[in-house]
Image (tube, rainbow, N blue to C red; front, side, top):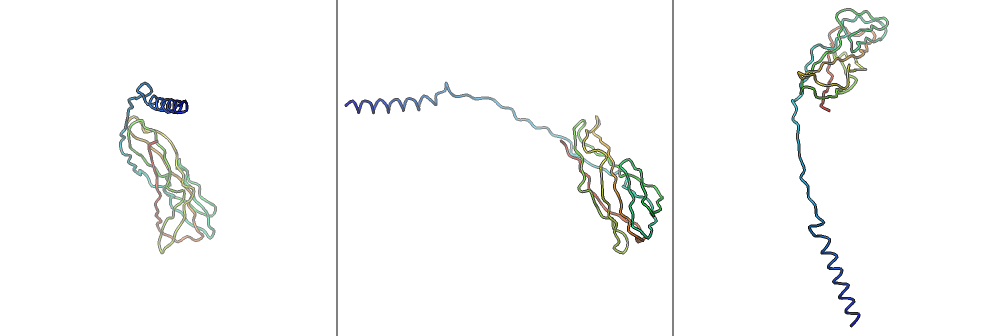
Length: 168
C-alpha cells in the first residue's frame, strides 16, 4: 500500500506542477506598434550628356577622359576640340531624405558608323551618397574615359549607361 500511496502522490505532484506552469500569473502581453513611411518616387533627369567633344584620331590608339568636374584630358597623338562636358543629372524625391547613387556598370560601348565602336571605361559619379535638399532635389555628374582606336572611323558615336538613385 505504501508503494501505491507514493505513486499516487508522485503523479499528483507532477500534475500539479504542469498545471501551475500555465497560470495567468505567469502570462504576459504587450501592445506593439506598426509604422510605415511613404516617400515620393524618385525621378532622374539627364541635363547634359557625357560629351567627349570632337576628336581627330591618329595612327596610334589613345584615350580621352572627362572628369566628373568636366575637365578633358586628350591623349597622346589625338587632337581634341569642341565642347566637352561631364554628364549632368538631377533627381527628385522626398525632401531631406538620404539616398545612395550608383552606376549600372563602369563601362559601356559607343556605337558608330559601319559597326565601328569605342569603349568607355572608368565611368564614375561625383557623389555616391547624399540627401535630397529641402525641395526634394539632388544634382550629380558623371565622367569616364573613351578609348579611341588607331585611325578610328569618322562619325558620331552614341551609347548608354545607367545611373541609379535609391533611398537609404
